[in-house]
Image (cartoon, rainbow, N blue to C red; front, side, top):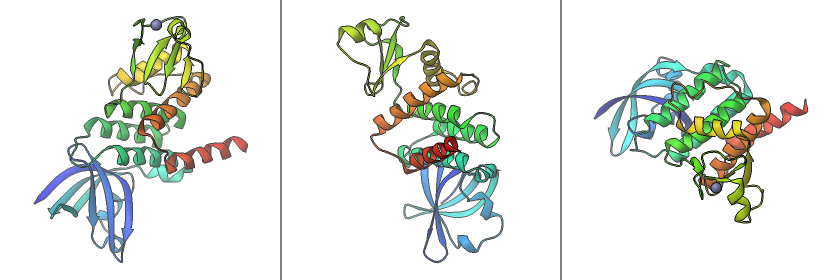
Length: 257
Ligand SMILES: [Zn+2]
């Protein structure tokens, strides 16, 4: 059976002499593993369309529950990502999260559209790495059904109080009064929000995809936002990511020079 599908290459592996496996993220079938026969010898049309971060039209043959590449045509190759180590590391982190969370056979239209948008803004230098990281982390979690409760305080339902906290591990908001009443303390997971950051959290989770990247945020708010979104994704996926460690190492080296 031949299937034609648009997909983004999010991982590649060489196996044996000539064959290569690529994982592609598709809207219809989630992440699928495709075998590219004789890949390393091909220098023609299939080459750029099957490399990491290529968004291509794939014609795939399905045989015994395995997928084999028949032909492919590149639609958009995010080649500029390869020219910048920090961007490449961040894109790889997005890809690793997608690969871990999206399974085969599950539709992934919104997750894919989010990832494509992030790669576009990243490769064209339209938003900072920090901005895109926080948007991706939180919105991705929302798209896969792990939306935090941001409507109001979990106890008194207040939409906005003078003081609001985000409880990362419980994925909810709590007002300052209830926070104190319950005897909670500020700690790694209990983070005090500013109004700006609260609005931004809501915006990232709930705005339309075509408006998602249309906001500005100051440096200090961005820092707090990044702390929250990173803790949120790591806590709720209960694991670490090598690509994230690598990205952070690059950021650290950047600040030292
Ligand atoms: Zn309350």
